[in-house]
Length: 270
Length: 355
Image 1 (tube, chains in turn brown, purple):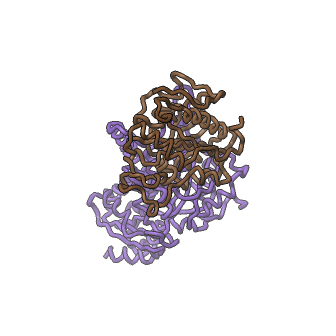
Image 2: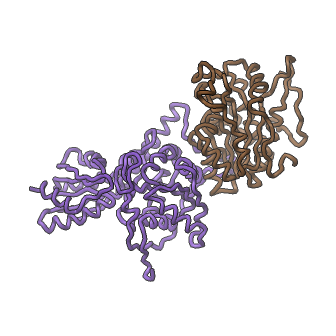
Image 3: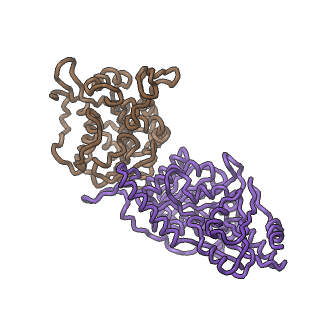
């Protein structure tokens, strides 16, 4: 794979080599999964801000449940869907800490929607990264709240029928509609194949890196920050890694359009 | 009051007692008959009298409240929440996680009638749920059973001591009667205890970091953790049994009751003694661990009959049977639906048994 272009963010420096915010342990994530990329982006941003010793990671339930195996900070494992409430509890007694979670779409948008909405509505100074791969990954490929119409999953073997199960829920739009959040953004994260060439675009990870950093900066300034990462799950989508990247960047990106949905503090302007 | 005495409801005493024990944070969800606990604390929040009380927050659900408790307790803070039956059921998710992550905090259950929504009267029907660990997986809560407004005020302090000593959730199991009862009390003048929390997740210093997790994917690891918890529960079992007794040492028949029921049983004992029935009272103060050793000692002293009086169809009686290991005659007197038995009912039953 040759990664060539992207919108190189001048202010962003990719730190190479071993970071003290990473444990160095090989991840359990499947080949092609964006969780690994996000782990690196998060560690890089924590390092950049010099916050490792003040950070508490809250593990959600799903593929991110072992985030603490890779991110070398203090960590607390939340019950399924409750990460935003656990984070609120930590932050309310220790406002000096930096608190963040990586949640999946099942965790955040289905079983934990109440916790997500209320933490956002209270404008808790916390940071949530939502990995939206449109499926329950860890449990083996069931329909998620974000599964697109027609997608075959183990619980929608004929494809998702939206007349039965409703339309995919857009968490980013929901949160952007609230007054509480300071920063709401959606990034299409996969490294994307460029047409039929053997060239790949790293625009997603680079945009992701900038967004992670900004999200943490918003929290440090007392705001609620949320970044949704449209991602892949090639194993459960029953696609090759390459096909899954195409599906995410071409099809899912239309259903969940990337963009800056809210930036009350103007961090993107610098 | 001028003489240092206060006159208040059990729920209010529980709240003030927690503040005097150094409460840092309270996460609330209203439910009758426990709502005076958060109402009292909301009133006292930011009062200069309790500088350690840093956070009062009303959550959107019982699940959110207990999860906030988990978060705050993870940092080593002294945290509490209170609820009643239907809400206590919802707390079980978080309590199972907390037991696994060994988090110290207090949950008060002001027991109302049940099952389901139930009415607002007193019952003791959450006994099994509280004492067995009402959530999934094998764990135990430490459970304290106050029987007066004075104890409602004192047990948060005791509860925090036990919670931090063993890193385990502690339940204060009261009932609608105790929560709403108004009595004269005195708050003891003691400084809040401070507990070391070297395990807390509050920012890693240097290479040291703390991970509070309940998932151990490797079977050997999960097994080691389960054995560690089991050993802890055994330690609690042997070191923390607490009970009270009244005229029990020379008794022929002993009433076994906790909470508000123990109070009316005390009156029944007096009446029975006047009627020349040698009756006594045994009151478990810790329901988990159940004070089996003290109860067994009564059989050794020659007590042959036990009458278990409770506000459920027979839950604590199971622990009494386990404790007595087949010795002694055990009878049940119960009342449900929010009703209390009259002391005279208990007297009649015991007299019938004594003939």
